Length: 150
Image 1 (cartoon, rainbow, N blue to C red):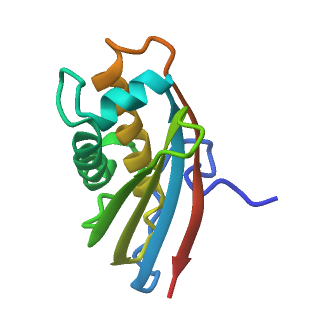
Image 2: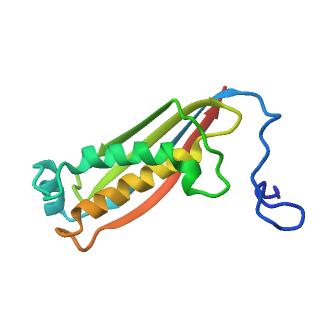
C-alpha cells in the first residue's frame, strides 16, 4: 500500500516538497455533472434564468477557481496554470449537464486538483444561478478522468 504523501512521519499534515522533481508538461481532465429538471435546462438554453447566462458564467467561474486552487486547498501547491478549459454537454436525456474541465501546466507537480476544482465550482455556479427555479438539483460524480505528464 502506498503511503500518503501529505502526512509526515509523526502524522502531521505537510506540503509535499517537489523541488527535486523535473519540470514536465502536465495535463489533467476531470468531469462531473449536475442533475436538473428538464424545464430548468430549457430556461438555461433560452437564457431565461434571472441571474444571466448560466453556462458562460459557470465557465468563467470554473477557470477562475482552477487559477485559485492553491488558495482554496491548504496543501495544494499554488500553480501558474498555462491553460484551463471548461466544457458543458446536455445529453439527449435532458436531465443533466455534464461538465468537463482540463488544465495544463509545465511544472514539477500535477494539475488534477485544478481540473477537479474547475468542475466543482462550475457545478456550484450553475446551482447558485438556478436555485430559484429548481429545488431538486444534485451535483454528482465529480472525478478525475486522466492525468498525463511528458
